[in-house]
Length: 593
Ligand code: PEP
Ligand code: MG
Image (cartoon, rainbow, N blue to C red; front, side, top):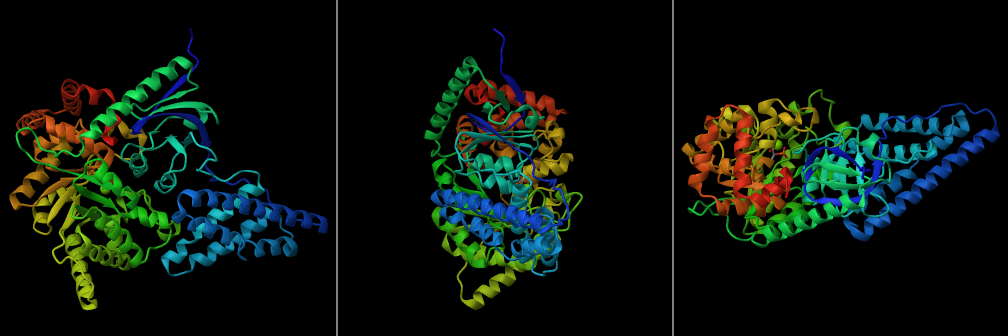
């Protein structure tokens, strides 16, 4: 029998197997609107009617969307409310009508002119956050324009469930909309395994495959798909036989997941008594319940920028404090590591907030942004310190590349502490302060940095990207993004050794820490605290409980003698296959499990 289905291969980004129908979303970047002048009253009236019909339609769509979101996530409706207000604001409503009636412009042209005027006005506003609101105006403008020219705006949330989204790319902000939306999986043409989009998909337990060539062209809207987030395969129009095969694999994977999760609460100690700490990475406060469910000892990385991205306005100190306090108090007495804002790179507050950069990954990102935008930084530090009174908190700075940066950041902490003292607000005076090691310069300087901080956390997602000069989100070079590269392993060893001399504890919080393939080598190199996507924890704990430190050290010594990454990969894979065949079986995406 000839097979009728087609297979596309991509990069596994979030584990699990799902079946659903494709919803192909196209970029809404280039609007193709026709512009013309109106000559008669009749033409003008027709354009007014068309414009008002578009506004009515947009209002209906937004209201429906708001009600749907309100039913499940009442706290997330404010953005849609805002869009409803903008829709009837004089800037986008009265002004286009005036332009049609008085200046004889067709509806599209009138809307476009009105929008350009608003944009110009916003660009002159000093406050970066009010200026940033233009993004919401733009969103409404695009929705209206789309209706006028007969295209629908990019709607991520489909009306019914069992939908697999297919897109050229999805931003982290778009991905945050997917939690609880009925989207069961997604496929993108761009992306890599350690992008924030992939990381969020894992947190939301939405299987995903990224880096699929020509997905938009190959996958038909409404086509039935099987998405295998374990191997990176996408099956198009599967026949009954292959569906059966995948249903079986799906059931086996679910059983495996359940089985490992059952023992997740047991301590992560090797059979020869080496105790490790296994922590969770979280992006949003809603993930707190995963910490307990998957047996984490605490939070090793709280990526705080997602709250900023989700709110779309600069959160007040109170909003930040409430968010942090909630997480810290819910997990007390467990440790919560709050990372200060890592904005820039692939995460931007608002398009108008920053000067476009040729290389954002090498630009005004993370600690660099915070040391420039000190008001934002101070506000966040005040909120973190205040939250430290409600449990155990430590703070860490991302993208550190010099001692100077740490000193400046710590100086601000001291100033903020003095303010809080003067105001009589409680905080933990001894709150540990750490540096993320994710830039090669920080590895080189780690001996000096160890004198400045209370702990290190190696961020391998960035360290690999910067050490190997491989963009973590570029699928063209995704195969060269190699955690077990000899240079990366030596950097890890260098940090662990220097920190050991100074008695500074070292954690690792990049995706590398949650991959069972890498784990024995990391243990052998001396990494004793690992922080990862919560779903990865049960598998990692099982591996830790099954191998001795002596065995891990022997493995690390062997790989340090190997000169090629292929050799190291083959060695690590062979070990996993022999010792943990069940884990090996479910493919390389288990890091995100
Ligand atoms: C890292 O770079 O490894 C890290 C943990 O930070 P992020 O993935 O948020 O850049
Ligand atoms: Mg990083």
